[in-house]
Amino acid sequence: MSAEKPRPLEGGCLCGGVRYRITGPRRHVVCCHCENCRRTHGHYAAYTALRREHLEMLADSTLSWYHDVSPDTRRGFCRRCGASLFWDAGDGRGKISVSAGSLDDSGELETVGHIFVSEAGCYYRIDDDLPCHEHGSGGAFESDAGC
Image 1 (cartoon, rainbow, N blue to C red):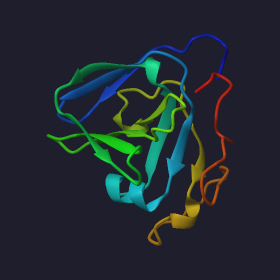
Image 2: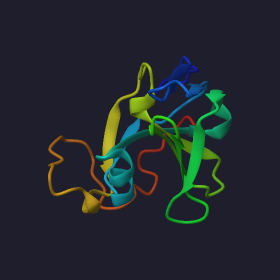
Image 3: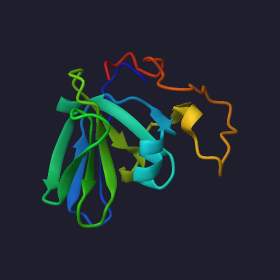
Image 4: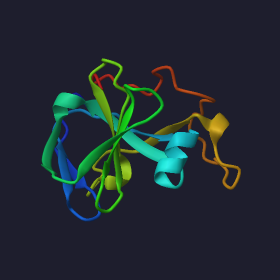
């Protein structure tokens, strides 16, 4: 990403009960093939990530949170239409992941790799030339922009 501040991006759920704006730097899209993401999204999940202070909620009357693997990890979804929107590791790093499919326009974002390919579903193949990591990326996809 360039050093200049990226343009804001907006997104939300299918029914409009949850709307948000991303106002600062964000990571390019990483596809997660872990079992929890596959079960939550119905397929693998594609997420961008950003610092929490760059996520502005415009409407959240139907936003609910589900605690995932640990008491700190949680997933944000619309309780009316079921859209999966956010993943929050709760690890104190101040970051949140946003489902790329919930963006109105993905702007300059592009898919840069895959994580947890060891848990990928047997019904599909990962056949692009992007970097693949058996488990997490260990920070390999983190950007210089601090997100």
